[in-house]
Length: 391
Image 1 (cartoon, rainbow, N blue to C red):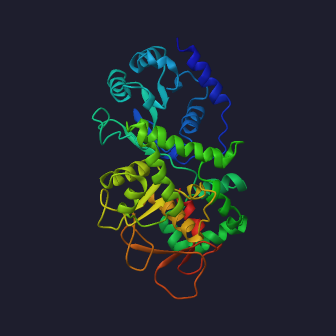
Image 2 (image 1 turned 30 degrees about the vertical axis):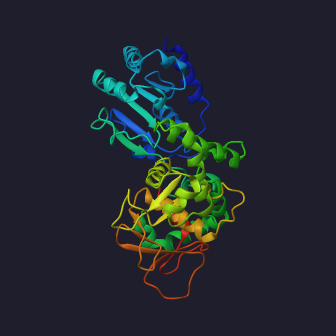
Image 3 (image 1 turned 90 degrees about the vertical axis):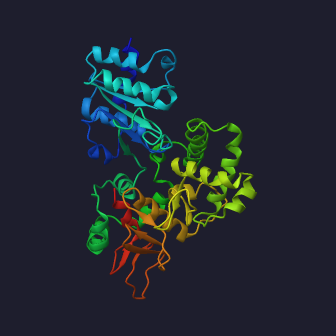
């Protein structure tokens, strides 16, 4: 019965090309029995699962990749499928797009309890509340977040290098040495502008028009990740699209709830909920001061990554907007980043203040500055691109 699935698995693994080693593979404890790989649409979750299968199992039948696009699961339960797989010697199931299976969380729980030798790794949309709203998985699932390409990953791939990851402490205390070493091998400023435009999403490697693919991906985030998974009526799609258009046109920007409600026809009380959906789908980032958090009003709204800033061909994006968006995106996955009123753009981990600037300054300052057009750091002025080496 599983033969068709094995044939698909073998074909996908044998034809898989993985030009970049995703560091998350090394960070996961693969001995855990139930693992969720969360990540927004387009960052390569399916490829990530198949890479793990290829590296760990090859074409061994102990591992099986299953995509729930398959209509087979309209009749067959996941629990019954897992029972057959385990009875045949299977050990690891890799489950993709599991949200399309109606009883996914309860059946994952059943599999976890019935088959103690079985390991399950599944992909999840970032809007799926795996533990906050789900008692089935709260105490058994281990969650990891797969992000888009960092500038380091992009540079390693494009320039055929193997630069390592650096910590924020490395970057802020040794940036002159590190940036000089990297610049001795390759000029990062030759590659940085292209990364900012199209390097975050791995699908830029595909032989398709990047802008069109990005627009399709963004619409899928709205239609599937927000409306379908969060069970919001399709009639609200146009309001969501309008709201997103405003931020694509203006971000980074402050938030005027009254204006947004008037322009989009969304009730004031609903605007913040929609912003949260857009944030969870990894379309927006919401920047708060240290003492505030959702559902309070953020200090500023950013696009989630710089590629999204170029989604509107009619917009002339400022270099400052690009630099701030890049910095926020590079740090927020592993550090606490907030707005501040202390004449700085950001405060990181409640202690380090950063100004974001386009060019080096000759003025003395005790603040750290992340500078766009700087190849090698000097003093407290750190090349902006170097923050793309945090993962």
